[in-house]
Structure formats: C-alpha cells, structure tokens
Image (cartoon, rainbow, N blue to C red; front, side, top):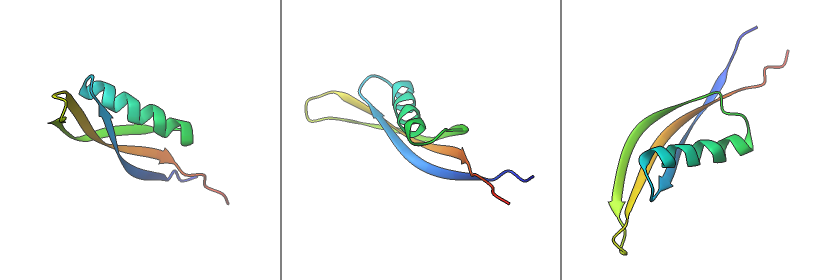
Length: 69
C-alpha cells in the first residue's frame, strides 16, 4: 500500500512570538483534518501602526491522503 500526502502552504500570525504563530496555524489546520507533519519555510514580521511587532511564519503542512483501492 502506498502512502500519499498533500502539502498545503499556510501563514500563521501572532503578536507574541514566531513560535506562537506556528502553533496557531498548526492548531487551526488540524481542526480541518489531521496534520501529519509540518515544516517552517519562512519567518518574517512587521511593525503594526500601533507599534506592536507581528510575527508571520510560512508553514508547509503535510496531510495524509486517503488511498482507496
């Protein structure tokens, strides 16, 4: 039996930390369907008009496809 995965590219955002941004996007993605693995591919940020730092992370999420015979 072969195993196949789909890969989605998602962006997580947090004003707390880059780590929190990753957790936020993974937890949200996992609500839709189970996440098998993830990879952080990019980190960036910005300063909001209110002067807060916003952390942004691009995450690749792998989900197992249901293989039917």
